[in-house]
Amino acid sequence: MPPLTGGIIINKAVAPTTPVNTPLPGSDFTDAYSIHVAEPLNALEAARRMMERRPRWVSGLLVLRNLAVTPFGLKRGPPAGAERIGIFPIVSASPDQVVMGFDDAHLDFRVVLEVAPEASGKRVTATTFVRTRNRLGRVYLATVKPFHRVIVKAMLAQVGRK
Image 1 (cartoon, rainbow, N blue to C red):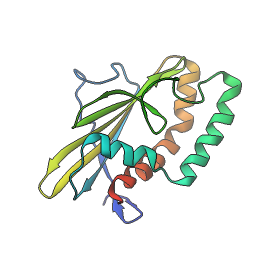
Image 2 (image 1 turned 45 degrees about the vertical axis):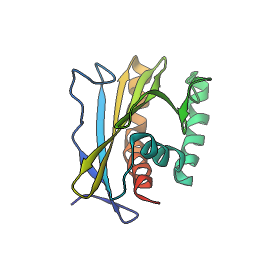
Image 3 (image 1 turned 90 degrees about the horizontal axis):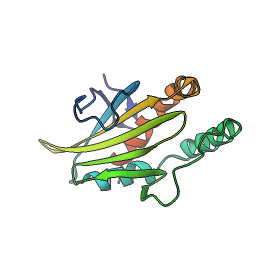
């Protein structure tokens, strides 16, 4: 049975893209979660709901993350000047798909939000791709992976809330 997040069903999904069109070739980590929504949404609307309306506890974890990574010289946020949704720079956008993310010295990441028609609404799928660049990236990924899974589910649940 899919886990519940605030009464909203979040499904663990298979990565929707193939290696040929992946936004981050050579990814070391990929996971995907999906949610059904009854209302018509495009990918930008879904991404805004997911990224701009995050739960307060997620914001608190991001503050702790920024404090922890500062001594290692890791970026505390997205590059300046990039068009963003929430904290994530937009790499590309279409009505059906938004790709967000950036490259850093320790790892590169992309979050892909896809919206597809379903019988009674839309299926919104959030897929994360991470490619580590060095030992620090591998340690960082191993450290944040358990939090990532909980955070993505909580943030994706925001798409289902009005």
